[in-house]
Length: 131
Image 1 (spheres, rainbow, N blue to C red):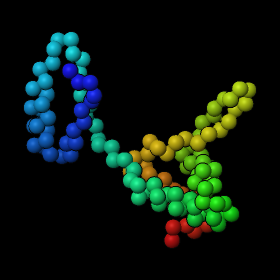
Image 2 (cartoon, rainbow, N blue to C red):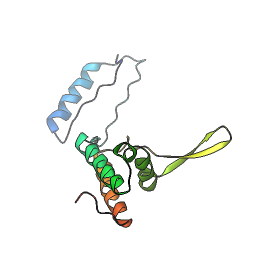
Image 3 (tube, rainbow, N blue to C red):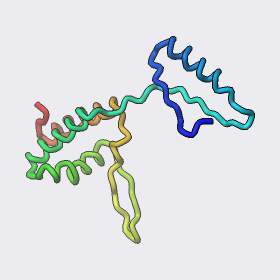
Image 4 (cartoon, rainbow, N blue to C red):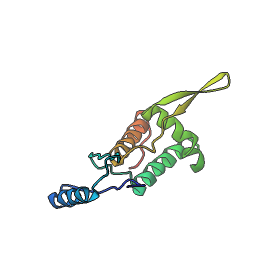
């Protein structure tokens, strides 16, 4: 019946809810269809502006520490992510390495928190960024 999942943004609209109910009624699934309906809070993905701001803060702080812009958004960023998001160990052969958790799964709210925490982390090390 469905090869790809269908996503509907409902918001808080009663009209949208009724429209989706009509779509479900029209599906008329067969006895062997195995459909799933998931209702959840809408995920608001981080914005390009948020990502650009976070990278600008990293570049600003990194520059004060003597890092290039590229180093600031790669190796220095990894340290910040380990400090704020945590890390996990990976094994390569006989050696164990610490890698940062990814910020890619952060939604808009989490990314705002990451930005605020980066500013606070810099301040805790005696640097004022984003002023």
